[in-house]
Length: 115
Length: 195
Image 1: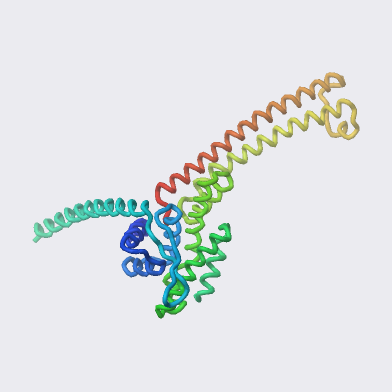
Image 2 (image 1 turned 30 degrees about the vertical axis):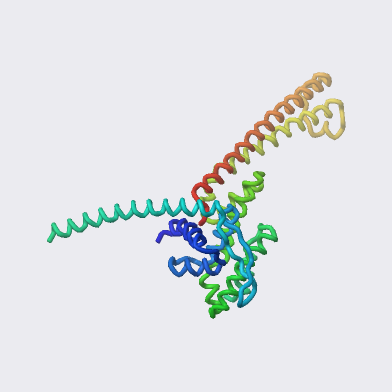
């Protein structure tokens, strides 16, 4: 997949995950990299930038296993942005799907004509 | 790569970022290693899936410089931001250099030449009144001391006018450069800088 495109979508993934529950960095990174192939280290700069832009705040919470972990929590702005991005994403995907489907239908017709 | 190697390389590549911010960044990766190790991964595995620390650092730097340039738009901050972004291969250095280097060189040459005219006038003035050192380096236009003195005062005045003109041109040009850099930053931001 195109790298620019993938990275644009990451923002949406992060906000959407945080919309469900507060997460710590490793959780976000491993969940995303499980589903999308990406260099994991590049997610932290994104987290930092989104935090700077006020989409979420961070807090430290003790963990049972080791040192405290830094959790990310969506702000109001973050929630609004998330909803907006998800809406945009669905419109975008359904548009692309429609085009791809038409294209497929054309291919199918061509194949059946040849046969 | 071990955890320490990774963190050292990352820290080494984060030059230009304030100490506190650098510490924050490193902390996140330390935590990432800690959690990964608890999950049973090796340091090498974690470092490998994180990716190249230098590439990661470039991204932090570009974001950091952009933020700084936005909050405080000094020339130095703007240039740093543009160069940090250029460092990420975002847009080519070739776009900036061919336009700005010759223009700035011309600007500096103009200012320098204005100084030279003033200096020439001053040297001529001293030569006219018979100061020994200047007499040996300046060829005077006439043999009439009075005429020479007025001629040189005229040259100095001309040089000063020229200098004032060049300086206002320089100020205009400086403002133009700032505007251009800000335009670039805005362009980058609008495009979404998360590369």
